[in-house]
Image 1 (spheres, rainbow, N blue to C red):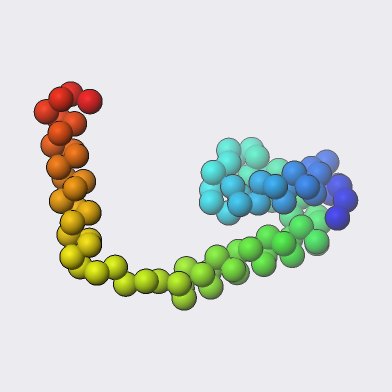
Image 2: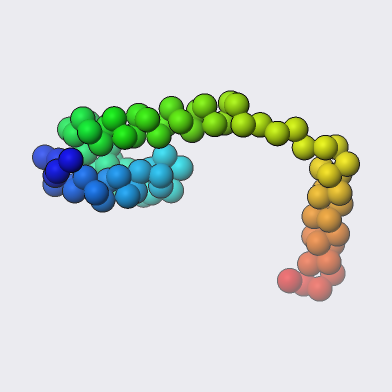
Length: 89
């Protein structure tokens, strides 16, 4: 990989790839990375791989959380919310 014609360095684009995929960048930064990905096949391949990997992980790595645990977590969150409301936090 090198430098794309958009001026964005490949290492910078790859470094920010996870932030790009997570939607954690400004629109300006996202647009710059998108331009780079459009112009740099190796970086686009890395993006494509990571994007597909996330889909596979999301679809296949789902553990069923026991209902008892879900209920306990819900109760703890409600207790914490009530505590914060009563103390003004």
